[in-house]
Length: 174
Image 1: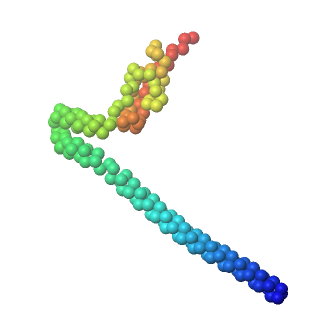
Image 2: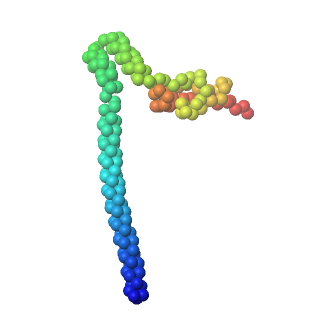
């Protein structure tokens, strides 16, 4: 009887081990299934993100391609005025007057878009706004702008083109 009891105890232990093993295997299977689901979700999310990036790049290219259209539409009347002026080149006074009007028309349009000239003559040299082409001895203060060789422009707060200038340097006495 004692032998039967020991066999029964061993059988119960094996039963518990088997049950525990079965539960562990079920848990592993559940974990694998969850990992597979998460992997699938991640792959779908990555694919969606790639598609999003491609769509944004395409929209950006479209925006850049047509961003200038508003300005071009505003410039068309000036182009028409040029065409009209060129038809009347025989009368030089009218041609000059027309050209001046066209200049004013274009300049006004660009100003309304945020363009403004950079002040130069009589100003102190500023490397963020001016580019020195010539240094000339002068009795004026060092680095004063004596002459503007090419006008510089800013668009809102950004320099589009630096003013090309001639600046003063101290007269060296020997």
